[in-house]
Image (cartoon, rainbow, N blue to C red; front, side):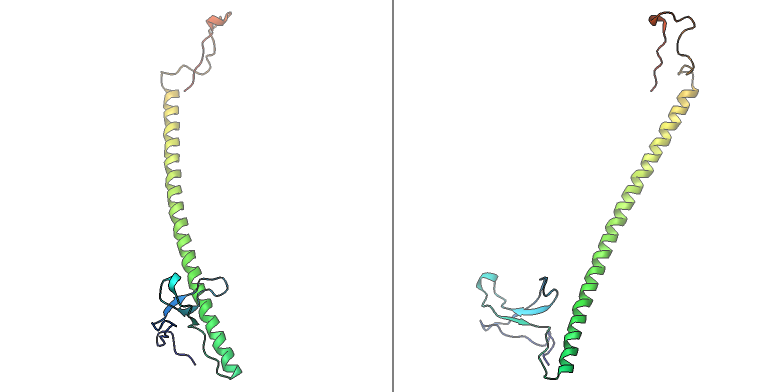
Amino acid sequence: MMDSPEDFEPKCFCGIDAKLKISHTVRNPHRLFYNCSKSFDTQCGFFLWADEPEQTGEKHLDELNLIRNECIRLQRRVEELQEEIENERSKWDEEKSKLTSRLSFAKDKLRQTEDNMRMLKESDLMPPTHWSCKADCDEERDAIIKHTV
């Protein structure tokens, strides 16, 4: 069976230590592999899966190794998704807090406005609302115009 990635350091075709990387492709997500450590345009083309055990010739053991690797890959994906969920939950909590604060502010402003309106209605500054015109308003010029704030 192949050594663990930490114990195995293959050399690429250039003769230098290959670099251990993680695949981010749809077909092989989160799989470990080695490739040339040179920059992309000067790489020698070396490639080797690091998380794939060598075939032992025993069908049962080979299947167990494949299942183990799939479990490892799926566990990594679960951890990634849990982290994404936690990040989203934090964002939602922050947004909820902001909106709750804005709602509280708007309710306070509404209460203040209602209190101001109540005080204006009760004060002597505003004429009674049942006054709409003078007692003898036979012409338009005699009408009292009611204004509201």
